[in-house]
Image (cartoon, rainbow, N blue to C red; front, side, top):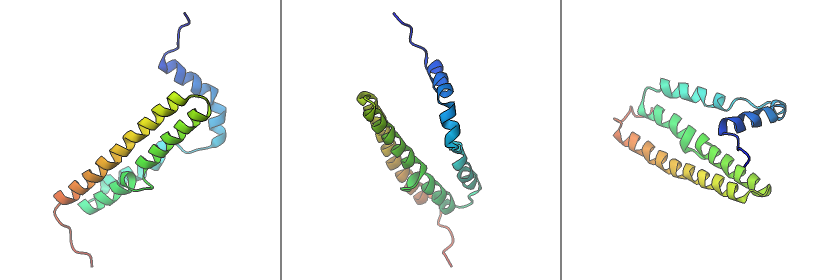
Amino acid sequence: MVAVPGSSDLRRTARLEAADYLAVLNLPGTVLSLQPWTQALANAETAAQFHIVTDTVIGSEGGALLALRDFLRAAGAWCDGHGQRALGDRYRRTSELLDVADRLAFQLGVDQLAAAPPGPAPA
């Protein structure tokens, strides 16, 4: 029986094997796009400010949560196209969890606004 490498070994080997590919892509770190939004959230002073930052990041169609969902769907399609249908199905099921998280985040945002005292009327 052939020993299967552990998850850390598999990930390390993949990172080494794909290092040149990743370097050529010249993509920014994935966390970099969220750091300014996280800082904006920390600096929010009102419930409306908090909500708009949170909703933009996780609740909007162009937000990070649904972008990650779409990324996982694309990963599923890649697996399908490379003869790994079962793995593709698992990526799609994982993406469906982000749809659930999106609905929960929407309701959480509504609940947060409802619980907050009203802010000043717009001028």
